[in-house]
Length: 231
Length: 231
DNA sequence: GCAAAAGTGTTACAAATACACCCATGC
DNA sequence: GCATGGGTGTATTTGTAACACTTTTGC
Image 1 (cartoon, each protein chain N blue to C red):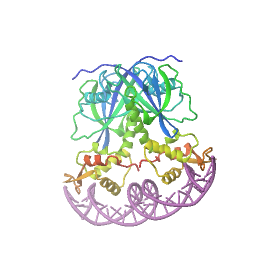
Image 2 (image 1 turned 60 degrees about the vertical axis):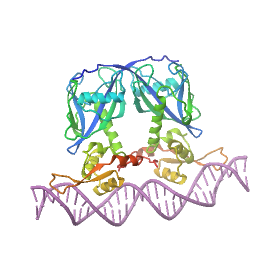
Image 3 (image 1 turned 90 degrees about the horizontal axis):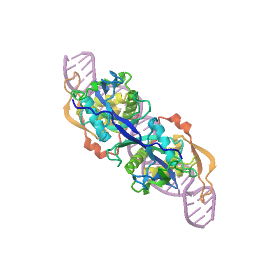
Image 4 (image 1 turned 30 degrees about the vertical axis):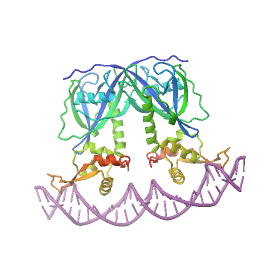
C-alpha cells in the first residue's frame, strides 16, 4: 500500500485559438500582454476560470473580455498540464478553438487591461509566443487540417457569399497544397451543400464569378456523410 | 471595464477509460469505489492530480494505484468541467483512454484502498456510473469508433497472434455492424501491415485458421496512409 | 459423415485523379 | 487586344460492395 495524495488545488485557465481568413491568408487572433510574466509578449487570449462557471462558459467569457468578441462557438482542443508550462507554478490550461468570419473587421477591444490590444496575425509569421502557446497553436493547426478534410468548417471562415475559387483557395491555404480546379468544383457541387445565387462578384477587373452560399440545412440532412479532402 | 477575477484554485482529477477485448466482447476497466461520495458505485479509475506532476504522468500513476496496471500508454480524450459534475464542489477532470491486450488476465489489484476492487465489465451491460462517468464513457466509445476507422488501434486489443476472423469480429464489435468476410480480408491483407505466420490455431474443433501478427514497422512506413473501415 | 469455421474471385458501381482549352470582363 | 481569372468534360484508375461455394478439421 502506498500513501495516497490528498486533494490538491491547481490553478486552472482557458486559452482560445481563433482562426480567421483574410486577404487570402489564414490568421489567428492574438493579444499583446500587459502583465507579467511575459509582459509585452504575444499570447493566445486566455485567463483564469472562475470557481462557479463551467469551462465552456468560461471560454466564451474569457474570449470576450480579452478581445471583445461575443457569441463565438468554440470547441475543446486539448488540455495542457506540464509541470513547467507556467513560470509562476502549476497551471493547467484547456485550449479551445474556433473559426470565424472576419466580415468588415469586427472591432477588437479588450474589456480588461490584462491585454493591451487584440489583433489578427498571419499564421505563417508568428514569433515565439508566451508560455507554451506556440505548442498549443501548433496542435490546433493540426486539428483544423484534419477536420477540414471531413467537415465543412471552411464555410465558417468565408463571407456568407463566396466564389468557388475563394473556397478552393481557403482549402489550399489550410491544407497547404494545391488542388485541381475542375476536380474541386465537381466534388464540391456534388455534395449538394452549396446554393448557387443569382448574383456575381462585383468590382473585379476580370470575368465575374458566381456567388454561392453554404446551405446548412442540406448539410444537416447529409450529416453522416463526411466531406473528404484528404488527398 | 469589468473587474477581472483573480487567481482561483480548482480541484483537478484524471479519469481513465481502458478498453479490453475478451470472450468476443468489448470490455472496460472499472473500479468499485470504497469512499464517499458514490461509495460502492462503479466508477472509472480516477483520482487527484499531484501538485508537481504533469498530467500525462499523473494518468499513469493513477491507473496504477487503482488497478495495478503499469506502463499503459494513454491518450487524452476530453476535459470535463461542468460546475455540478462533482457533488463536493468544483472538480475538473481530464479523461484519458487506452486499449490494451488482456493476455492471460493481468492481475488487477488496487494499490490504494480508495478502490475496493478493479475489474473488467462488458460495455453493453454497464449500470449508471458515479459522477458523470457514464457520459465520459460514452464519449470515449464514440472516439474509439471513429479512430478505428482510420488507425490500426484494433491490434492493441488482440493477442499478439490472431486470426483474421478474430480481427474481423473485433471490428464488428467496435463498429457495431457486420462486415463482409471476403472484402474484409482482401482489404486488410492489401494494406500489407499483417505478417502471416507459419503457425495455425490449436485446440479448435474445426479447420484451424492461420495466425497473423501486426507488423508495426510496415505500418510506420505507410504512416500517412490511414486505414478506412468507415462503411 | 457432420458440424463449424476457413478460405477464396469476379463483377458492377462509385469515387478519385489527371489533364487543357475557350470564355467573359475591365482596362 | 490583352491580362486575368472563370468555367467546363472525359478517360483512366482505384477503391468499394455485393455475393456463394468448396475445403479442412475434430469429433
